Length: 254
Ligand SMILES: Nc1ncnc2c1ncn2[C@@H]1O[C@H](COP(=O)(O)OP(=O)(O)OP(=O)(O)O)[C@@H](O)[C@H]1O
Image (cartoon, rainbow, N blue to C red; front, top):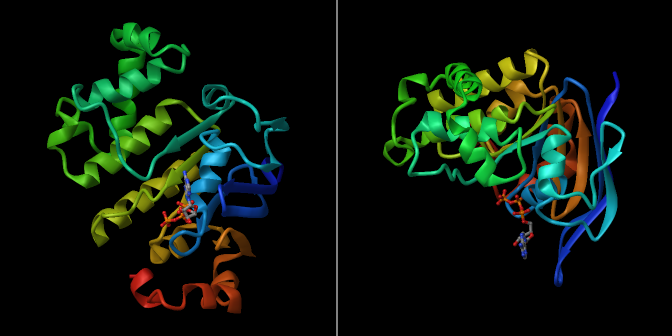
């Protein structure tokens, strides 16, 4: 299996806080990797280092044999990176379909204005509709996102990430705030995306779903990587159990 992403010795420091401390891991093509750890472990910071929102103090991040560090976010998106954020922030003055259409249009241009002009392009609309069908919210295509429940918004966020047609999809807590049935359904959808060939890194606190769907886990605690391997042996690692002490593992896995 060939390597798609290689993160080497990445360190991110905010003033006196070392959020990510010399972390290395890799992702093979076609993998669904769970990236987990307790609150404040530095997971989102690592994701932001990969997307380019934060700049590592040191280290290297290579996607498809190309160094990402130093490149702007839009360049990384063009190179095949797609991501959904922890906090869902759709454009509220547009319908759900327009939100995804606009993102699909932004694949063709760097300028937000250019993307706006492309909003009516039939090709992007058709693609956007397909994606809404894929994530199961096509019934809300004409709705204003501000009227939608969180379960829909989370799936809208995934559809927007997919509109960029990424080689590597980074999902930051897509299941957060969803009830058991909604989380299960969205997790199944993530599996489907992966089965269709999409490589995925899933940052998630819902350990039950992570254990169910991921083929490998990387665990970060307090900025350090403490485990990397198959889900069962990782969760049985003493360092991982200790990291989650204080968090109720049974609750986390519920
Ligand atoms: N922009 C920032 N400026 C200063 N400190 C930050 C910044 N972003 C994150 N941190 C700090 O870095 C550490 C790691 O935070 P991060 O959000 O990456 O953790 P996390 O594992 O994603 O947490 P959670 O699971 O709670 O979302 C925390 O101590 C946080 O306060």
